Image (cartoon, rainbow, N blue to C red; front, side):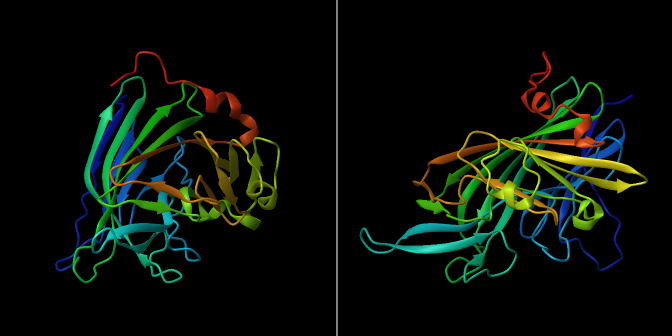
Length: 308
């Protein structure tokens, strides 16, 4: 049976119609597994299917249309833009909400390159280069590029076929000015659960330390958080999120969002040309969380002999 196939989705549209987004789809064993959607205003992973074919995440739900499945974003991006002499002015952008948010103009994530690489051994890597651009404004009709991001997602299928691992790596480079991100609760790695898992539908939350309520999870310094719920036909599925390094803080809710980042309580400064690397591992699994050994799965190394 064939392994991975990565290709752009081409839609046949009525005359005069056009698409406002572009999507590349990764197939595994001839089944859709994961999409890279180049939408407006951001790039994100959608759809996200479990290995048994159940949708695990939601795209642009009605209550939070800026929640896009699995996405990377940050509010409160403050740029030090030179004016005269050694003076600077602060230009502040919002790369999280689709509209002006608390006075901060919305930016866009524009994909400038995308590629896929079969690593062998049921592993695949998706690479994207993304410009974080501010909105059209006086003197910058196409927006100002303030960050260049190199983003990769490595997909590893578990040998027992119960789950797969997404290893997200993001490197932000400040261009062409110094900037700072945060403090903000709207950053950095984000997951929005499929609607069928939400709230009264029966979502189950769990952290590394055993916390099970949204309040306790949000207040914790947990190494990982699991969200699991019904996906139809008596089946359950879920995601486990574990950021790399730290310090990190969480926002978790039973209505369907898991956010973790290092910018919640402090600003993260970058000089012009300086880069910030961050990573996150996400398990996408079928069945209840109790059926998998979460700590062991999160610590599992890639299969031997599967380098690019």
